[in-house]
Image (spheres, chains in turn red, yellow):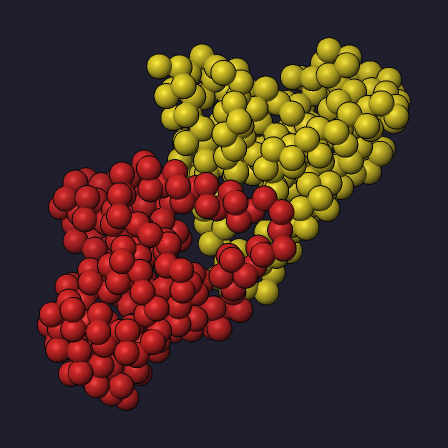
Amino acid sequence: MRVEFHFDFGSPNAYLSHAVIPRIEQRTGVKFAYVPILLGGVFKLTNNRSPVEAYAGVRNKLPYERLETERFIKQHRIDNYQFNPFFPVNTLALMRGAVAAQRLGVFDRYVDEVFRHMWVQPKDMDDPAVIGAALQESGFDAAKLLALAQDQSVKDELAANTSQSVERGTFGAPTFFVDDAIYFGKDRLRDVEEAIIAGRK
Amino acid sequence: MRVEFHFDFGSPNAYLSHAVIPRIEQRTGVKFAYVPILLGGVFKLTNNRSPVEAYAGVRNKLPYERLETERFIKQHRIDNYQFNPFFPVNTLALMRGAVAAQRLGVFDRYVDEVFRHMWVQPKDMDDPAVIGAALQESGFDAAKLLALAQDQSVKDELAANTSQSVERGTFGAPTFFVDDAIYFGKDRLRDVEEAIIAGRK
């Protein structure tokens, strides 16, 4: 069984999922494969928009979404989440950096640290100087990582991840796959866990 | 504790919720109060649209929604659901009829029967002749019920139900309230049940 988490650092719901995934991994014994995708690319390919944009003019909808986020945080006892005041953040450099981090063998720690810089101690993470300082603070060779992130093959790989994800049914983030079964949004994590457990029987 | 189900017969997700609610009532011992609202009125008051309309141009989104509906049906073993081929159905007469049925003391059976005529043996339920025949088949005095549905105070009550629901946070249907806590959509029924159980402790 292959369980995948298709994520973009720019999504608060991706961070909240990332905060819960280790517990599901522990309970089920199954590791999630993290797949970096570019949410902006998904939106372009599917003609979708962020909820904040799509529901800006709809009464009650965004307050309800915030309420559900608060419920999720409370239910899962996530005590370190802070909404990024620079939201929406252009994550192109960060997501290319994720592919570069895979090649440099520092992917897991990169994911943890960048999520922290986005949603725990939030910063303006589309500013190259801020990104560089944040990665340096996290103990990465920021110059090396960011140079590799500009490599054409890295750019192409992120674009391919994104388009392949859309081919499999993605229209937003976070998206999960349990083998070929797709689940959209942090609120499906319970179903994801049940599908993992059912699949292991 | 007061648990409310704000519904419109025109929503397939309202029917699917209606199919599951009796089991939650049985497990928790708490009865749901059914509140008829006009979904078209909610959309007007909130500037919202149906998912089918809002996501018509978004790749992958509606197929995913259909997949989640299939999962819900399978998970809850709902074996009698049939998508209404006349969807979307204008439900103004049916929803006014629901208020009339409350006054005539036949509300619970009216709700069961109209949901059946919409989503089990689906018919073109915005055609007055079809509505009349369906209600007659269900053993109601259709003429009396539909005449009362045209009463100004019935019309006003449905409009008041709808605007009061929006005042409390509604933007679509089905919507649930556990006291003042709002839950949107059939996929929140698990949370509704947990809230009921938590509230009874």
